Image 1: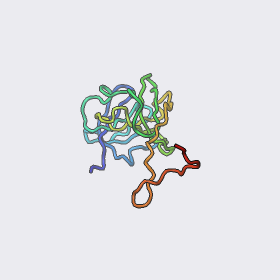
Image 2: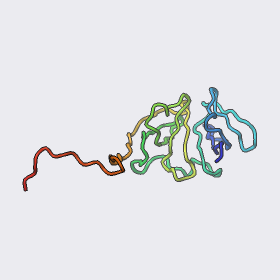
Image 3: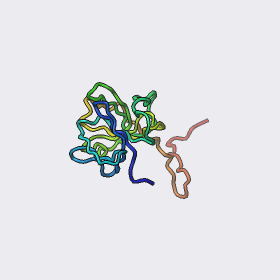
Image 4: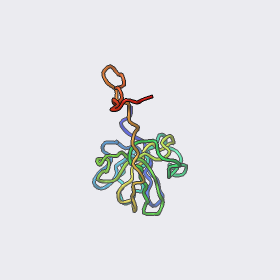
Length: 163
């Protein structure tokens, strides 16, 4: 397993920088640090970044063929969010229903087409004009099981049913 992840950093000036980031330490106080494909270390300020796309493979622009909104209600558990960027474009995604997921520098979410080339998207706070929660998606409850994996008996009835 690799300790670095492939990313495509999309800037507001429509230029993209492809490279590698260390997931636990790429966010710095002044910007995002990555190792470009040209083997140079690059620090991109947050106010220049539109989004950081964590991709499976380098290739065409990750925003070109990506769905920007869900066609139906997402199946992933978490917060279904919609954001509007400073340039007017919108993006939907699912983020964990956890306050620790709201990072100091931005938010990471799962895009609508998680089976596509883009696995995750990091959006800096400076890039977002409007951020709204569309819905809270819960995970289905698991059946309550007792000892030895047997389902627990249902609640006893208070009144006998007469047939």
